[in-house]
Length: 231
Image (cartoon, rainbow, N blue to C red):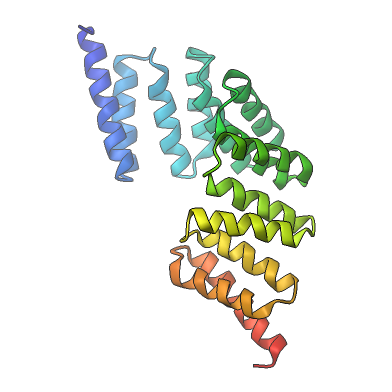
């Protein structure tokens, strides 16, 4: 049986997870704090607290917690992946790539690390490296809609619209309510001058997306197409 302090710490950690799942972040952090006070040697409690801070947009605090988790467990692959995402969110792309690469070194089949590293490469315009990472993510998980969407976006950025559309078709086949895939495909159709298809995709975004920014972008695109068509 675990020592009393450890048992209590695990209970607080688990309650923190429950609060985090309900997006009650302040209560989650309070419980993780108590768990760490009772058992400061447990790496995953810092990891969990870091994840909550990231969910709150407090990326610096998230990184501090992931640092501690990695200090306690240098082979904690998910901590490297999440710290990489936090670095990417604050624009520290070289640090993000280093963390994703470390996670891949520790677990060469870690699909999310390839997908996330690909997105970071795309963010800095290294499209060929991004495609290579998305290829690997798809090889490891052929049903990962996000990797097809991401690769399609990169192909569109390279001006390879037909290939990009094919990837976005696959993403939508795998996830028929993937609003961002419709948005990206609509953009590709727009750039090819296929306005009716673009309009259909942008209208789909409006009907299925809960993201007001994405909806506003789709409405703006529809307005622009109607202007071009003289409607």
